[in-house]
Length: 86
Image (cartoon, rainbow, N blue to C red):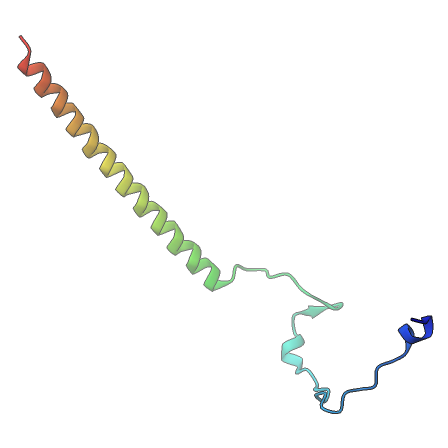
């Protein structure tokens, strides 16, 4: 393969889409070729974080309740065992 064959241009494909102008509203947040950072949290993300927080709190409460029930059952078993011995 020769060096010239690597640099040769490929002709445009006849069915390539035409260039379309980008509306100004789509470019409102573009500064210097980059998107400017958000100043606020995305509302969808904030809602998702709140739902996740509620789910984690609910799971934590369920675990605490089951541990408490387990401890009560163990205490009852120990009490019954002590009551049966002289």
